Length: 295
Image (cartoon, rainbow, N blue to C red; front, side, top):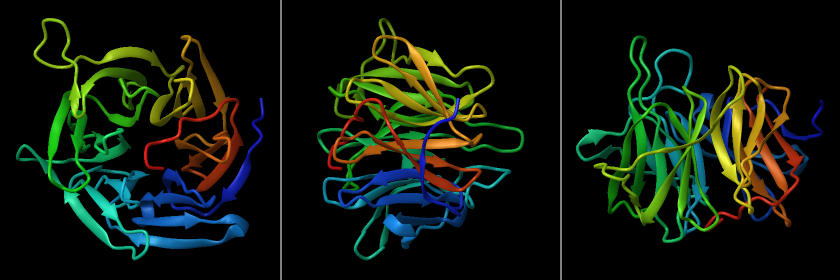
């Protein structure tokens, strides 16, 4: 089955983290170039900031600045991944990059991957964990304030935690696990606090589903109905877990589909990043995406 899509930009160096702006432009992380670019209609493109490291997931915050998960490393190229990770604030008017957090509880942040703002202005983000030649670190979920005043660990012990998103009512936090190709959710008890499992010392991830075959997941987005749309690698496309429990799959011509973000007047424009072919494409979705806080 062929998927109809419009190519918005080509020649991007490992695109990730699309952020749809009110004026119709799309901000994209170019991981291999260690920069953030803004894509306009008609092929116009401009550099927003040179971040160094590996900018990945991003979102607009309550102050109108861009908040970025930077995986560290050197452009996320083959070999070791992560190390020197940080949460950054980017002033869109000046391109100034400010480092907000690079450690938590005395431990360095390894490779923050994706983030989402809750309604209070707090940031949930995943820490993927550093990947070395013979070892993979555990990963987890963290929460922080965008003013640099507080950071806390919500859960630790996952494997390859990547995409993150909140349910429409903010009571569930969804996360994709890349290495195992699974989707999990956590109940949110309060800002920065996940509900503990019965007779457990901490939160317990609830399994929701898996990628088909040998595929694995990258980042995700949520729709207004509460469906979770997970970017799918190897199979190449978007896997959607619908609120009723069924799943569907939209194929795309790239084995490494990294992210999806919704925009447009009706929130049915899905902007999707294709890493191997270096493209940002737009697909008309069958339902509106969830409007993000502060977007």
